[in-house]
Image (cartoon, rainbow, N blue to C red):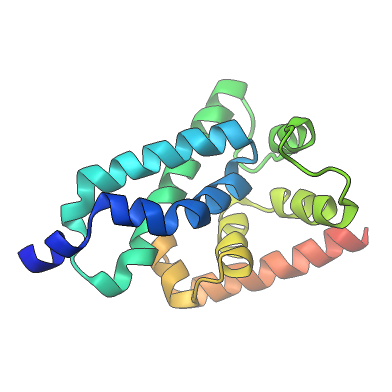
Length: 168
């Protein structure tokens, strides 16, 4: 374990995964500033718990799990603060439209993002991990703490719901 711990450093993980994790978090919390805050919290958790990463082959799933948990915690706190229901995306849609870093001129991308934000939290998370981040179902299961079958099912239902929302 010492050999592995010496080869993995927080700095290397930040350098290698910064951009990927930023966009993963950004798709979840929408706002650039919030994504930056959640990303910083993510790397703080990585630094604090790096010794808990025992299998180098699980590095990416481990990082995405931390990032996902931090983003979900941020969303839960935001919902509590704003008194929104768990899967109510109206606040996130408002944030999406108001965010100066969002390209609102790309109507197709905006429609897709709006449809994704209308999904229940687990479906939205699984869809983002599979479609945008291109994680395998095994990695998604590890990130979400679910089974591979549940990850596939959530992705399937998310795709169906997004297609209906886009066609409407």
